[in-house]
Length: 419
Ligand code: EPZ
Image 1 (cartoon, protein in one colour):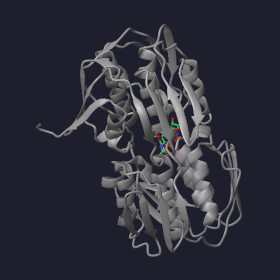
Image 2 (cartoon, rainbow, N blue to C red):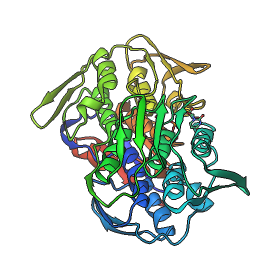
Image 3 (spheres, protein in one colour):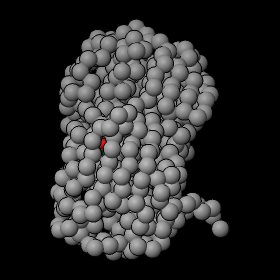
Image 4 (cartoon, rainbow, N blue to C red):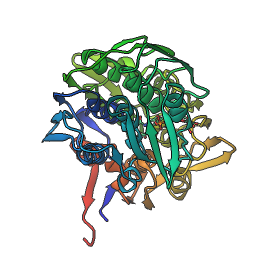
């Protein structure tokens, strides 16, 4: 397996471009199942997870072609309604084909996603919502078997705010009979981008981006063109990289208005972050101030930025507390950061971080997508060499992060297995 080797200590200087959002692309690609015709998508990031959703769709008989950011998807013919375990186990977001398949084909057989490194991640709310809309759901041999002669609009209230749960049911509701109301809905920008795509397709969705979304069912939808929004988590990761290396970078295609809480916390840590022309200027200062953070659903501090922010706090002056309220096991990166000299103690769902003068490079192992990004960031700010193994985790959600950082002056390279 390839690894990434970083020699820390270089300041990041220059311009860098944010790619399209992984967490917008995945539900939007799944939504193509809802209509016949030839969809066109632009600014699609080249990620392992995007290749996986493409495999899932092709397995359903969908015609997909494209590369370099532009894709054509034609779901006129759907040959079967099965999303198999060997694909779903590699990416839980494959569950996003469930709602569209039940709505369009009246049935679906989708593997249960199972847990993952960061938590059990049940999908009970997805299934409860579909059942409330009239689907018959059976769990057999590790698969969800869903059938619905007709889906009816319902008034649903989520016990827990769920991003893909909101997306799955919003998609299913577009072709239901009558009106669906989703209360306590997720408000993430990626939910809004999906709703924009669905409304372009002819759906009638109101309130996306708030915690109450109304969907009036329609007879059918049609193909559209759409440009995927930029990835706010990649943008936040690049900002932390600048903060850690006292860098001075300009981020292009930065979704500044979708990053209020992240920018607020980074400014509190002493960074300067301001719009500048067609991008955002990000300047890291020598003195990093300690800042407390609690992850929350949007517009709160995103759990997907927790590991990255923890690296910044590892080098801040003073003590900071980071509380993870979304997932039950999202501190896996802590033990690897401790091996690099970070002073972090876990107490329940909180990490108590005592800033240290410096981190030291070490061989470390990535365990999940955002943990792998945090280890790369730690390497940038460490004395000596850091080798990050199992970087396939990183490639799930970051497009050429090593190349982007190298272009900004980082001493970072990808090393083929066996070299
Ligand atoms: C989405 O996952 C994102 N993935 C995750 O990003 C992100 O961390 C997460 O939302 C939270 O923001 C995509 O959008 C593809 P949830 P999702 O359903 O939808 C509980 C990344 O790094 N829950 O919002 O799977 C669940 O256990 C990934 O890009 C239920 O209990 O997350 C969790 O505690 C990681 N029952 C909480 O809700 C359900 O039916 C939030 O999960 C569904 C969720």
